[in-house]
Length: 214
Length: 214
DNA sequence: CCAGTAATTATTCAAGCGTATAATAACAGC
DNA sequence: GCTGTTATTATACGCTTGAATAATTACTGG
Image 1: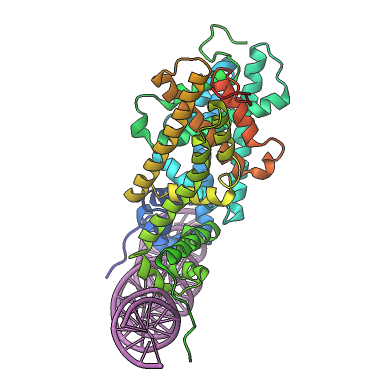
Image 2 (image 1 turned 30 degrees about the vertical axis):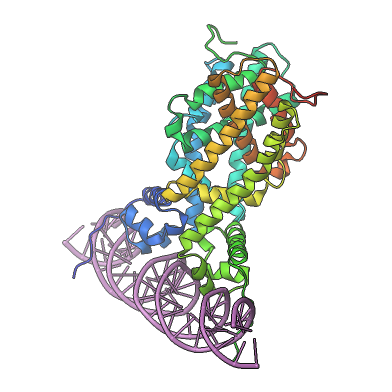
């Protein structure tokens, strides 16, 4: 009886494979049934290897949560920092990007929910969530300040904060609605509704394309 | 060695106890660690009894999900139907009620997330979610139509639908933000922000108290 | 081409899981 | 009070779990 052949991969490569397999497994089978054996099988390795890279299953789940959130903020964060664009256009792109693929994705939502449900159970998950939330809100707040300035209004910090919270809520809520019941949503894309709503929240400032940057 | 004493409870009473224990256990230990033994212990019975009331653990989880959602829509639904009030005031109360205790509660949010993460795993959970979402959106849509009419505007169905989706998103999103990071939120209650934002979405219609109903 | 290293597999372990069944005691009706 | 019913307890079963250890094989550096 011979052993199965294998190849020695780099640490970065293996860890990534294992994290991807973990996320796939949780999304498909739920946290309850995401066992180390199933995850290892999906990653194409045997279960013993997991403990070679993560000293416990919990640590691997935390790493997977961090990875998921990083992948979700990455694309949106890019558009928010794309300086050549108008402030209004950056906010617009930011909203659209958060309400389209790959962020608005049923699998990602499922994973997000699974991890959020553990925020109260495990303090480490709470910490990861808090970091990501604050970063997201700060991004929105910065965009709002830029848009107000661009529109010739005073970017009062208190007003920016409140608008950021409201916009953040609107984006999160429509993200939920749009990806949870997407079949019912095909007619009216969440992104379009979000843009019109954001304009209303901003007191009528249009987020449509402009000819010159501020 | 004598057996532990017990009392024979009614079916309704026992089922309620078991469901409450299930929700407590999931909120505290997570779905992974919500075992039949732990749930039974919290309900003050032995594990064998669970299968006397639920033919499997999954069925008990489904019952718990239904119970959770019913408890969350109940209070808000009441205010939405409280006819003596102005339409504007009913919408206002509906929003406030969804963003205050007992709906805006960290434990409930944790439970909601745990179940949402199972919507993609188990079709029964998907069904339960869909029913509740549609009912909630219809309630908001009805309130929006009433408010528009009250303000002398045409309650165009398409506009009502879009406003309902946006308001629904706003409420859900602020519910998430407010209860997930409530310590950072004490200064500015989510409900106040929601009211002001809803007024903006409605094109400036005030939701403040009025002297006479429509 | 050989030796050393460590990534990977294979196997084992105790504990805990959901489920099933048999024994028992609480209560209802007479 | 006694008796029948059944809600409840107690116990057992087979399986899976996360973790630990030992054996092996792929690769690195000389």
